[in-house]
Image (cartoon, rainbow, N blue to C red; front, side, top):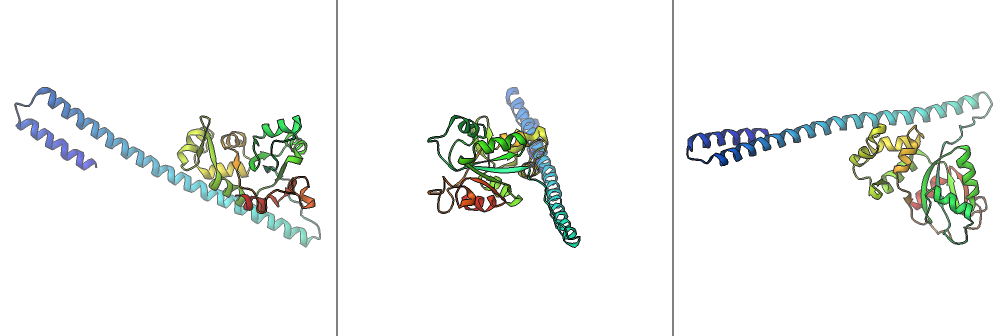
Length: 257
């Protein structure tokens, strides 16, 4: 592309020198066109270089995240082995992240649970959102318990949700996360430039969890296998729909995703 511009430039100079009677305005137009073409080529080359460098950064980050996840899994296995060898029990740390799914529609919901569902952005049945588990959010989930089910999602579930059903909120519009540029424009100021950064921030409940979770549009899921009919008024323990499923939420996510 650059060689082509040079060729056109030399050819134009030759035509201008040999054609003495060429109008002055035409000569200026040709020179301006050449300058614009050279500038455009330079911009394209700079953008290509920038994209290559960014891909390298994204690849390195993805590698570091994979190592972090594996090290965490290995540490848990090692703690379990040590507990067995010493005759004690391994108690895993409390979950910091929950995935909450709405199981009931809008009919006959008291004002307080209705307000909580609105705060959680669960406006429709089968909507799902990530929630940071704190004392306040746990109380909110208990108030809205008959209308939701929730549990601790694993890394596979978080990735599947974001990659398959992830949409971002861009100027009030629901935009699919088809390009890392969308994520970088919205969350780049927090150091989040790609979808792997987004998954990592959600799964680890990082310092920018609130901003990332607000950017993510509530997940619109399918009805689970067999549907909710006949189960909405029963707790999960009684083979129903609502309530805390703990790690069993991952099975439900597979059915609804």
